Image 1 (cartoon, rainbow, N blue to C red):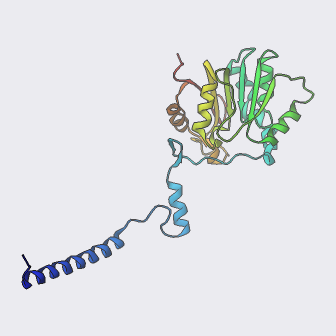
Image 2: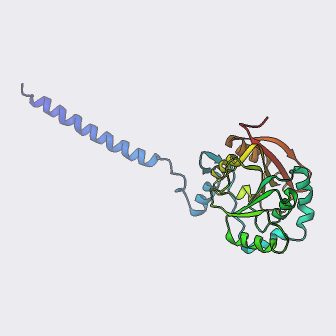
Image 3: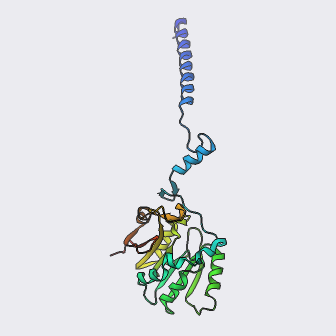
Length: 260
């Protein structure tokens, strides 16, 4: 059946009304659209907005910014005269009760400030894996070892997400003022976890972020809450927290799956 003239006119009128409504809605939506983070306001506002957002690294969302890695150009700071007084390395080694013959890792070994002490502690029957992502640091470590009759240190040039550790062979991994610089903490620490023997330990030493008077850039400090909040979801269990150092926390972790 053919449509009547009145019916055609009604249809045309309805279509015109619909088009007008769509135009109004489109205009309104364009004006109400929320800005995309990172694309709002001035450059300064965008930078501020970015700083507020947590940093996504793997599956874990950090509430902190990962610190830049200390370059070999500043390596002399690692052997500054006051470091012995501030960080008490010999007391740290003693407190960790590392047995002779142990296999230990100095993760982020730098020029070997702790590597040499670990090598002495584990003795000739022990093994120290000195790991760093900068060949320049390992070169300086080798020069520091030269002439000291130390033959139980093996240097490993790591990548940003893989320290290159043997699986299931390590008694202790020492990470001194380094964890906060790891570019891929989940991936790196998963390799660390796999490297441990069943009762192996991971020791993190970090400057206390809770204390604003410690003269260290906040990016290079961490709170107890931050460290636990990141390491525990990775499968580690905090078994001890030592606080005898004047400026640093000492965290002792084990693999949660094998911890007693």
